[in-house]
Image 1 (cartoon, rainbow, N blue to C red):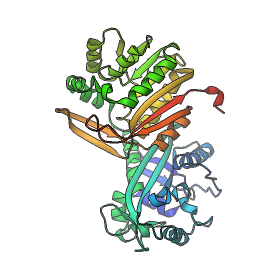
Image 2: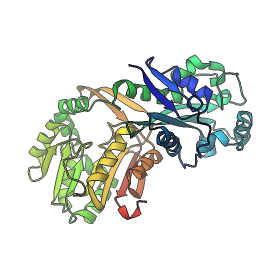
Image 3: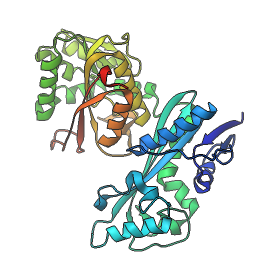
Image 4: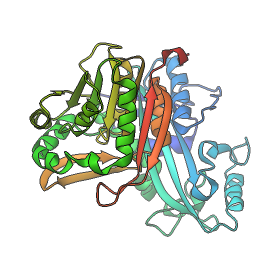
Length: 412
């Protein structure tokens, strides 16, 4: 069946690049194709906001499936600039040569040439919003090279290559670029109608390694100083304010710690039934149930507070957005949500874990991206904390902790 999709962009280059990656039964139409000649004011503070602004504008006019993207060049030595101002870095005339010249000028005398391109695609399909992200790491060359591509391509050298995107050409670029990676996720969704990995596969993987997971991690909080401090503070604040739920509770170690901090109205929830069985065996005085954090078994505004320590690591960016929206739905007004995740980018696929055959993906995010998702879900951000890993205790990557509040008085 032939399908039509509107690309909320007037860029011929972008439409050509993305069209080459879409399934053959999809027809991609640009703003020019549909006769749209107006300007869409992109005044968002992030790439995510700008992509959504464009997609929402066109969707409101046509009531058709539409996607928009926003891309930023983020140069480490320039504190992430040009970033959201990539297209107009040197002025409103969107002049590629001037933009390139200004980046090179601002990098004069700086040894660090690290940079990355990041693309965020916002899709509105059947009135539901989805986000897809693609990142390519690289560096800024000393001078422009090549005539291919557009924008900053002549000075961006992708990681693993010695030539710029301007030299490498579209065939290679369409395989490895930031936009290619974001579009690949979009295409997978359009083909399958689903995001990220299959929840059933995640459940089966955790069930398979439940006993070894329990053996290795049931005492993990003994070695995590900051985790204990945050959990104690959260328990003190919310132990007498209704039901507290521990999402992705695993074998129940966090639920047990909260219980020892005085939380009595407490339920641990995990996708894997075998994890729940182990939790019930270890901590018989606590309520545990098998459940999906994308579909919590609670009515709107009935949960007092929620915890999710490292429980969102198996969701892609869209899944995290859905988790946040589901938590917001279930929480009472004034309820708070404390969760943590691994800082980074991309996805790590595991086929063996804890000596067990599994089929599971672990996703990494930066704090700004997750903050945008939290605010978009309706939350007010109370605190964000990042820490380095504890040596010989856990996976050696940075962690982020988000303390959010559902405050409907702040909603516009």
